[in-house]
Image (cartoon, rainbow over all chains, first blue to last red; front, side):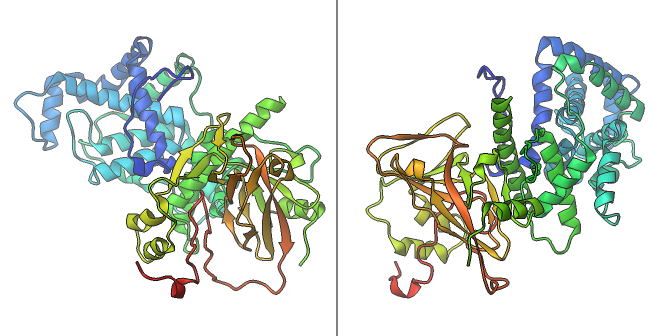
Amino acid sequence: MAAAASTRIFNVVFPRTLKNHVLLHPILGHELGHAAVSVPSKKVIADRIFNILKVGSPLSDVDQFTNWLRSIGMTLPDTVSPQIAGYWLEEFFCDIFGLLLLGPAFVGAHGTLLSVLDPGGKVAGQRHPPVRTRVRLVKIVLDELGWRTEIDAILNSVDPTLPRMWQFLDDANIDEPWVQLLKDDQIRAAVKELIRCKADFGNVFYQPCDQYIIKELALQTFESIPPVRQQDFESDDLHLHALDFRCILLAGWICWGMVEAASANNLKFVDVNRLCEQAILQQRAIHLQLEYTK
Amino acid sequence: MSVLAHSEIVNRLQSRNLVISPILQRAQLGDISVDLRMGATALVVRGGGLAQLDPREYLASESDQGHSSEQGKRQKLERFDIAFKEPLILHPGSLVLVPTLEWVKLPSDLKGVVTARSSWAREGLSIATATFIDPGYTGVITLELANLGQVPIGLYPGMSVAQIAFYTVEGGVREGIERQFQLSFEPQAGRITKGAEAFIPRP
């Protein structure tokens, strides 16, 4: 990744085979969270989030954390490094950051990739908390932001019989101690605090797109057309529409939800990805044209 | 068979019967054609290491699947992603395959005919393109660009390099017919041995 001035910020290793799978690329929002934590001025904010998340949870104390790990049947070394809780808190922070930064499309990428890494979702690592605890956190953040309700409304307006998007979110939220590591209120408070600091991150957090536009883009993708907004050719002014790439990715995920539920659509996951990739390229061209004619 | 005029092209675009997306300027819509822009990928044809283009290699690769199926025909094509505002330099005598920026979706009663824009042809840029775009085609269109001039040509993604005209198809097309490049996302090597299998010796 590089800044506008071509200054290298950090390297992210991503499988080349997923180069065209743009619907999975929002996971990079999580990695950008790690980059943010490494900047001293942003670390101060991250520390505030860490504190909100750990107060009253097993993560607040090494002994408590060790007992919690044992209670869920974890095989542990003789001593649990106090750093583990810190690593886990950073992971939780980065998940919230990635979701706020890249919007609902982050949820699809996060759930898809993590479920591949650990289908059961119970494996706890030195650096990473169990997948289910992370997916549950994402669910609560998504609900807190009201984005899932919007997605439900879009799907419902397309076809009321369509199943809910990202069922894995609900599946992850089981009432077991190893999943309920963080309290709902803590997560909600952390989200609110991070949103309060959005100016410190350059106000780049995701802004929801108009539901009608997302629906149109999703339907268009379903018809094998890249999701850029279509123009009014009968108008004298051939109006070009600016569109955030994060809205394109969300439309792609909603389209994929529709494809999975449909029996008469031959689109594959890679096709939807490549349609969105093409749309992002086209949207870049539209942006350049808009800049030029401004 | 008749060519679509401007008003009918606009009507079809408006009703989404025909898709050419995006149209960045109204000037792209000509009297009987629509200008097409260059996309941001290039397959540069490299001659090095090849004694000849051997149809037998293509024949072998088409009966195979996976990576090995690509070896025979792809090893001479070098793929580049080109950023906007960065040039692709096309040297005299060289050939490059580029996609259009536009996504094209044709209805079953139209075929497309792609040709070079004359202004580019006068500079030595030849578009020996796939010419006919079948009814029902969906995807970007591959343009085969060759520099027939004596000086290198710089090409930028987004430049209008070709144009497509539309002709009505009478009698309808066969349903379920295999389309060679349907849902095409980027340039691909062609199937030069199609229909000629009986005349090419097995390698």
